[in-house]
Image (tube, rainbow, N blue to C red; front, side, top):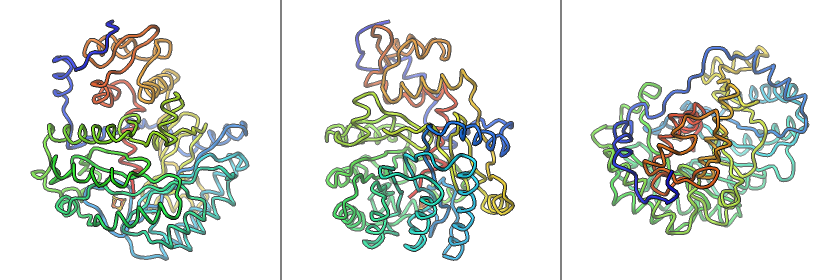
Amino acid sequence: MSTAAPAELSPEMVQRLSARGQRFESAVRSLDWGGDYGAEDYVRALDEVARHPAETLSLYVHIPFCAGRCLYCGCNTTVTHDSARMDAYLDLLDREMAMVAERINGDRDVLQVHLAGGTPNYLSEAQLTRLTEMLERRFHLVADTERSIECDPRRTSAGQLELLHALGFHSIGFGVQDLDPEVQRAIGRIQSEELIRDVYWMAREIGFDSISFDLIYGLPQQTATTFSRTLDTVLELAPDRVACFGYARQTLDGPHQHAIDVHELPDNATREQLFRSAVAAFTQAEYAWIGLDTFALETDDLALAQAEGRLHRSCIGYTATPSAHLAGLGAGAIGELQGTCVQNYPDLDTWRDHVVSGRIPVQRGHRLSEAGRRRRDAISHLICNLELPHAMADGCLDEGCRCGGAWAGGGVGWGRPGGWCVTEAGRFCLRELCTEHDAYCQWDRARWHFSHSD
Ligand code: SF4
């Protein structure tokens, strides 16, 4: 293997990647859930976790309600304007929390609480307060538990932000997507640049430790020019983190996406150009490029963790504070217990029926084999650290990825003693290549589909 870092992908690698292409339709490959995991398995896993009280826990809470449906949305959510429905949901969420906490030993420290949906900040201030009190009553949230929430800027107010901060939510994410009015019209989500600026500065003045924006490339009407204007405004505001996802058209699960005119979607070359323009803009502004699709100020925890080799990823994203287990709570919530990815019933009625009758509402899980876990760990290490020691990959990855051989020859990697490193050119195709090797990476692709919200 060459020890020099090639500047570009080989023509063969370019051909291999373009043959696969960026899939507009079904860009999220569905995870092979298998049919052999259900609520009983999850209960057994909770009982097993209970025997190890020192193992840390994180919580993912799904709030599946929105005021309207954005046309690009692939999230598990329901449009409603009935606040009583959300009260009823919180009643049941409390019962689900009680079931999980009792089994898992709720006394263990919780490292992270993440609220997503749907639109968590569609809850009223009283409901947000109640939800926080429920979490504090059922689980052991400690002083430095990292509490984060994803918010829709259109549902945000100064009073709500002050309340969230007072409730301990010091990390906040806003769904920005794109600031161009034509793009916003095409995706059915109108939010002015002035609104985004106001919400951002309110959050800054209140003192949130971390403010993140979600952007999406590959949206209808997006061009290099419009996206570059969005990037300029985002850079001017300088949020701590920016996640830049590719739009994944999913008409099978989200028929509302048919309302997006496919003729208005940018072609593959433009999609690629849009993402490359985001990478160039953020890295030139001294943001660190984290993993596959995230950018963080160099002083941010994620950037520091990546620089120090402490970055991890879970099924809800990158983190500098990994926990042993992630429990999902709420309809459609995802989690990961003992290395098994699990999901609650996304259908509200089915989830409700289970909770009302005292049954854990887990619908399915993806159980990783020992080799699968090692493969996941190796691929996660590669994505987080951009290098792969041979020792991690031996016996669990195929030759091309294991030693970087074929990938290195294609310009994706370069050899170093005991392992190989990803080249700058290789970063742009890492997701596609990793997905070939790792079911967990498919989950990583799917996380946008299941958990992205605002
Ligand atoms: S993108 Fe966010 S606000 Fe829009 S429908 Fe989906 S979850 Fe709701």
